[in-house]
Structure formats: C-alpha cells, structure tokens
Length: 282
Image (cartoon, rainbow, N blue to C red; front, side):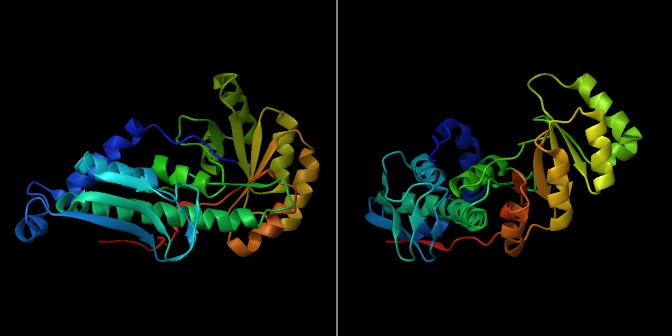
C-alpha cells in the first residue's frame, strides 16, 4: 500500500538545521575556494547497495533549500526498490550549490533507506500471518518523524510517536501505582474515547489479572517465549489487540508471527540500523 508523502513544510526545519550544522557561518569554503562562479554540472545520486529507498523527499528539500534554481528529478521515490548502481535522483545546476546540499541529502537518505530496507526484511518474515511489524520510540532524537516514515516506506507500521499519543502502561508504572488493578482503573478514569490503553505483561499470571479487570484495549507481551505467546493469544481470544516485543531478532520473527499476535514491535528498526550506501557523482 502506498501512502501520501509528508507535507514539505513539516520537514523544512530539520533540513534547515542540518544545513546550518554542516555549513556553519562561512559556508562550503572548499567549493568557494576552488570552483569558479557560474560552474554548472549535472550530478547523480546513486545506490551502491540494493535496498528500499527512503529520504528522497528530504534529499530534494536539501538541494532546493540551498538553491531553488537547481533542477532536481527523483527517479526512484520513497518506498521504491533499488539495485546496486541505480540512479535515484539527478541534480543539475550550480556546482557549488549541489555540493553544499550533498552531505545532508546523503546522510539523511542513507540512514532512512537503511531503516526502510531493514523493515522490509522483517516484514517479509511475517508473510502468511496477520502480524504486522511496527517500530518503537527508540529513535534518534530529532529524527523520529522521518525515521518512522522510513519504517512505513519499508512496509511496516508506526507505534506511538510520543508519550502523549496513548496510555501505555509498563512495569515501572505498575510498580509505582501499586498493582495491575490499580494502574488500569486509574488509566480508565483518565482515558478518553480517542485515547487507547495498552499494558505490558511479562507473565501469563499478569495477563490473567489484566483480563480480570477488563479495561485495556491492547496488551504487550514482553520477552515471552513463543509457547507462552501462543497460550496468551488463546487466553485473550480477541478481547484485546496483542503486541509482542522484546529481543525481536530477524530470525525469530516468523515464529513469533505464527503465534497469532497482531503486532511485533522491533526497536532495532531504528536503533540498530546500517545505512544504505548512497553516493553522489558529477
């Protein structure tokens, strides 16, 4: 399924801050020193690895923010599949402008394409099941919006974006509140019809308590083995959305998906990712 891209203005602040960081107060002193004014070139943004592409919208904004007269054409858009050596984007115009926007474009697109590529590998392991791969809040500070968008480009889904999105009760909340019943009843009093309640459990005994209270909309099975997850799904019997989490390595995903859970959340999608190797050549 394809999704509409984010509005450019939502990404502009990230691009401006990133360019400010790279260019500082003096700009690209190397290009200013050695490239004559008015030098025009055509450049290609290439893949050096195969993978799923993400970050082309950001790359385009990087070049346009430096110089709105640059001619930028996206050949493989966000969510597209690329082979090693494919050209994702062409950029034509002032050579100094292209080089000023290059590193920000490559840094962001490389990282986001790495996330999309890893997500696609996890999604492939769920084929034939109802399980969906989702991300977590374990994102790079300042990049959460675009990293979560990259997960979508790879075929995954998004978990909450922040602490304000939903009521998600974890073990520390239960400890501070006193008990599973106490924490769920307080959550029920605070929640609205638009804000769902999820609670984390790590034992089947805790799950029994949650089911007895009957307040939660979703339950997160944390660090359970596959046999216990299968039992838990049977106990829940459709009463709640079921999420599995904890140490979700790629080699585990097919087995976890077969337990009948609805979602598998994977922190590694955004916190342990290898950039897709991209380059820019004149």
